[in-house]
Length: 325
Image (tube, rainbow, N blue to C red; front, side, top):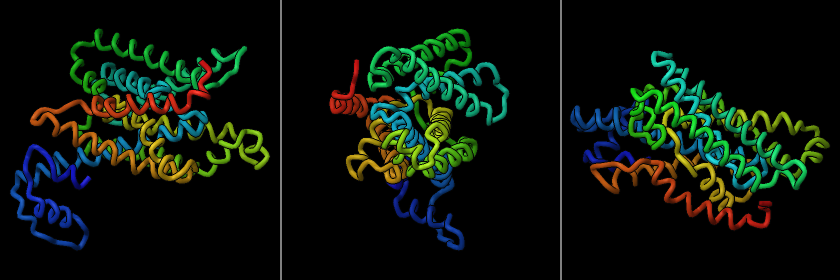
């Protein structure tokens, strides 16, 4: 985050930035020496973007870890399970149908779409697995891909039918945090806090659930209740991220796997570390997106896809013995 604050098209003095940040600490008063323009660049443009990148990356990563715990599937993530596409459709509907709606309408519509997308993918996977070795990795992934493509078609139709809103809708598809401001942060912060708290408090229960439903029931735990709460919280986290940044793929699958490689498979560790590493990962991706072709910018989703595409192939190869396609 500090590197992202210091690096950008507008050159800001390092000492001035550090002093300005220190000046925001209660009971600390430091003259930063920044001009009015530099102060506005730091606090009105760069700092909201940095905070938004960290928030979105953390939400997508912890949501991916939550989905993987619920489905006991290493390939589950917000993008593959249709949650991100569903949230995008919901937010798009709110944009085109309720242009003068209050701030909470977009994340609320995105949340509804995220839940709908996940339920569609899960239901399709269950139907497809009947009469065979059900619930496997391949079945769930294929169901998620099918639902995501269907929802993408719905979103394309909405775009064509509402050409006056194309600019705002395209911003969702490309993904990015370049338009982040304090108003957006205030809008999603309460939803994000609820989602993160619920997920973090269910780490131990997800560890129990990983052993098996029968063992969990023996210990007095309701597996269905845990799955429902984690599913809702992960979908809410996805909805918050998509509502302000658009569709950014692969964060939810790359980060939890990196965390497991470094710290083990316990969800009591995976969930909080995914939140932190996810924020750092997207922060770095956004820094690359706005500097590699400066003064222009790459879409943030393009940068994460460059990393996530090959990584997904490696994960799929590592789990090939469990894939029943």
